[in-house]
Amino acid sequence: MKARIKWIQDVMFVGESGSGHSAVIDGAPDAGGRNMGFRPMEMMLLGLGGCSAFDVMLILRRGREDVTDCVVELDGDRAETDPKVFVNVRMHYVVTGRNLDPRKVERAVKLSEEKYCSASAMFGKTATLTHTIEVREA
Image 1 (tube, rainbow, N blue to C red):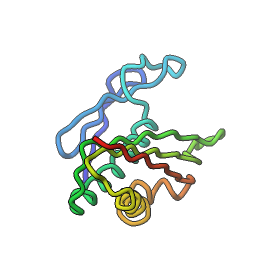
Image 2 (cartoon, rainbow, N blue to C red):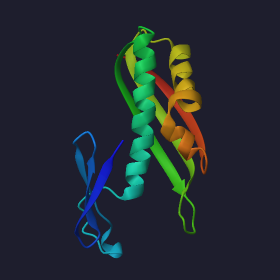
Image 3 (cartoon, rainbow, N blue to C red):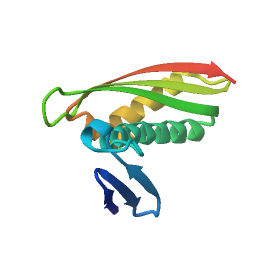
């Protein structure tokens, strides 16, 4: 896997993935930025949510669950001193579908967290990860 970060100005950069996608990374005005893009640590949190949601959807679809929507809301706390790593991350999964089996949704989330999600494994080195699950009928 490859990635490239290119400086634009001040504390603004463009990140380019090896798969050909890009995103603007910028800082808050008090850090010299213009608030024109994601903060680097926001991208880390988004990566965790995206990695886990990917796993959950894959597992549920393979289990023939009729999922119509999957949202992961993340709330992370960072250390107060440098390096300001994440120390707690709360993940709230909202999985919507037709006749979903809540036990299968719980199993999919646990499998992602404990076995498949590489981002969860990395975050787990510095942070306590917790989750809640809400299953909704479509």
